[in-house]
Length: 186
Image (cartoon, rainbow, N blue to C red; front, side, top):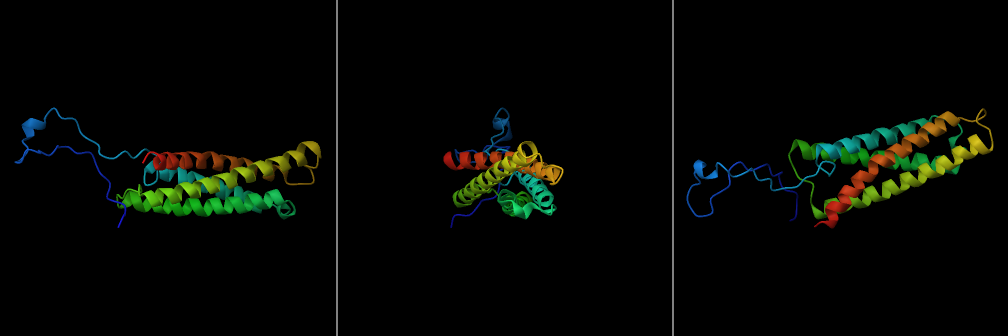
């Protein structure tokens, strides 16, 4: 069964391969060896947890701000933004919980299937979030600049929610790229 293994910490003493007990005097000049390359931002690291929490915060902000307006259901792009932000929020909080668990029990999340699912999920959610943010930005520009109807609509809320969606996408892309790189470097 292929499951994650406990995190490997730096080895202070290199084992003797010649049979017998390693003597401390022999290993004085040997540098510490790190056997595992966990880059901050990958799943199961503090950097990865920070990215997930920021994705959750900005996605939830975009969702809350857009849903707080009374006339967002009348525009399909704004409904798409609410749906994409909701999906991003659920995905990010579930992976943040997974990261917290991995950090607390010192587990590595570098399993091939796990990293594959993280990569696919990050790719899908980041693409949806970017598409929704772009569509909402286009409608916001149409309402504000081209039609000049900002006094009748909630332009400030629309622009703020769209900005939060773009920031959420900016924090999702590093997660996707690091997972994809980890998957491709196997």
